[in-house]
Length: 517
Image (cartoon, rainbow, N blue to C red; front, side, top):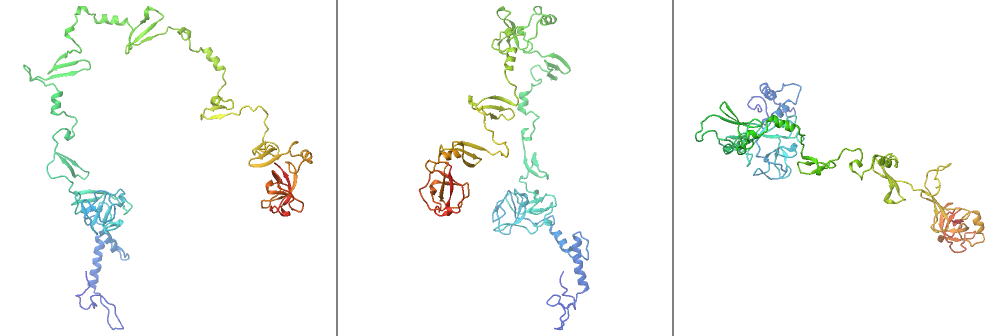
């Protein structure tokens, strides 16, 4: 197809169509019907060749037809095909061939099979070949040939992955379709054939094992395993059959049975018995019927002839096993180290019933650690030892919560102290400590003792409300105007009023305090 250069009067400009130019006064080119029809028909032929029906209002049919041809089942050959996993980058050696830029490579052995496909070699990362990069180009069963390679030279490979295929996501599998399989030309009596009917190995075995035959004797094995029939001095060629009937060896010549074949296992001619000196079968059975059967017992009787010592001898190890006479008590059997039923019942009656426990006792024999062991989890649960006094109940009264209450003697040895959870409540006032009687008793004592009040100027910085504690080292005895009067008092003081600024100097730092310890 070309421009209508040889058609007169078309008016091509530089060999191409041109528009009319009224300004320049040049006419436009004409499109001859013959040429236009030919171009249209050529396009229609391409669309029809792709198996499509031409449609006037569809403008993508030519592209779709070309794409369908691009996805044909025979791809341009590659230089080499991989024999194992490779990095998809760089100029590397594949199947004995040093690759160059722009070489085509069939990658078929990647651990991630979605990376398989046809690639173009580059110094950096490889890219998929333009004829096998799009989904529509990679169709199931497409065929591609390899040009070079120590292993894969002149081979045809076929994509066996079923459609639909999404390039880069679908795992691609390539199988050898045709070409050299590595087997040299020649005749082979044993060959290995793959799923496509190709011979992948061949050999010429000379033994049964070589052919994998396991149910036949070798020549040597047959000579060693079988008795030769006939051929000896004075022997005929009759058919001789020897076989086992489950009890005896039988012999037969042709169709004539000769009965048992006697051997040292069932007959010893050197010790053949005189029939007059043997019991008949019936006499033997009568003698045996008078005896008891033996089950691994060689002798049974009374040791030393004493009826108090019955025994049997074990046939397997010759051990003498003493037997007991029939009795109804332990003593009757001579047992002295066993408990009678009455004794066991008495022991059981002295014990408490078990309800979900296996043991009860003192851990490590310590009376302060009584415990029980639980059956379900085998856990040890310690019990509260007897207190020896009536404990004070904690909580449960009117307006009382379940907080932990602790009462103890102060570490300084001066007062009884109380604490709720983590909150220190200080000293507890009693008739002896901190109450009005104690204060009255101390009214003539030296100022500053526990339970006494004092007007103090408080130091340490910051405002403090009623109930706060101040260390005596941070305080000074003071006058009502807030001026320091004396030295620092001892102990710890509870602020009974409030201070605005504990600077230890101004009236704002002065308040009434109670020594608590």
